[in-house]
Structure formats: structure tokens, C-alpha cells
Image (tube, rainbow over all chains, first blue to last red; front, side):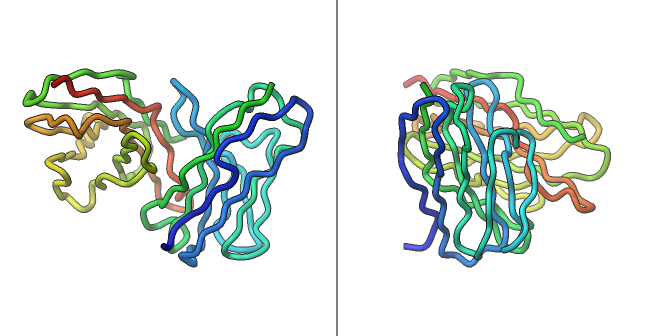
Length: 113
Length: 110
């Protein structure tokens, strides 16, 4: 079934550890996004990529990095996790450089202790 | 800067009663507005967008540029409408990313 796959589904992580959240889509969408969802704050954009080989910073990029080596994959890396990065992370994609609706993954629940 | 405000974090409505989820925005141009919904144990998905001017699952939303609002309405609430609703804005002219509001959790009381 076409769509977006995120892994892992959930993770408990010690502060200071490095963690990569994986996101893969098979819809050949150009644009991909990482959001974090926090109670009372809604969805906030972390990083985005309009096309393979390019990335950009969103609203809350500090402490996160991304790469877009190909169209399908858009991993999000926390170089040294901190408790404030405890959140639900959603990957999304859209066609035509963001002109169409977003398709979301099922999310990754991350707890940093 | 673009901003989306959803003043209600929680909203409870009796089944059969009208529903209105409020959304206000600030943007210096002509934005595109959306409503996204997340049902329990499902992925976040698009409910409707203002340029389509359509009714989805009985919901409608009209863009009011004078009041900078895009409220979501349904005349008769159903239990399956219980979900988290997000209003979102996309600007034009190079700033094409979606900005989401803080969300409203709607609970329909049987």
C-alpha cells in the first residue's frame, strides 16, 4: 500500500544519546516534512525538503538535522537528545513542491529521559 | 509572519447539536486555508481546503477575509466526529509551507 512509513513507532532514549527517526515514502513526492506534535502547541515544523538534495529549516530546527539523499527517504537525527525533545514526531510528504495536500505518517512517540 | 489561532483546546458538543470550531489567521497576503483531522488511532489527514468550497462529512468552512477567519461548521454533530482538528495556513510567493494551529479536541457527547 502506497504511503509514508515511519520507524520506530516509539522509543525511550537516554539524554545525550544520538537517535535517527526514519521516514520513507513510495509516492514519489517531491516535498517532505518533519513536524513535532506537543500538547497545547499543535504541530510545529522542524525541517523540510522541497526536493531531493535540498533541505530547509522550519520553525523549531535547533537540535535536529535532516538529509535528503534521494526522493524516498528523509531521516531526522537528534545528535544529542534532551528531555525537551520528548514529543510525537510526524513525517509528511506532498507532491508538486508542497502545492498539494500533505500525507502524514503514523508518527513516532519519543521519550527522552 | 503567518500565524493560525485556534482559541479552543477542548470542545464538547452533544450529538445532534451544531458544531463550530474556530480558526483565525494572520497573513499579509491571500492565504490558502485547510482543516486537517486526526481520528483516534488514525493518521492526520486533510478534511477540507477553502479553495475547493466543498462539504466533507457534513463539514463546511468559509474563508472570511474581513474577519480573517476560517471556522469549521457542521449543523448536526455525530459521534464519529470526535477527533483532533487542526486549522492550517499556506501562504504564497515562495512561502509555501503549512503553518498549523494548536488544535482543538472535539468530543461528541452521546
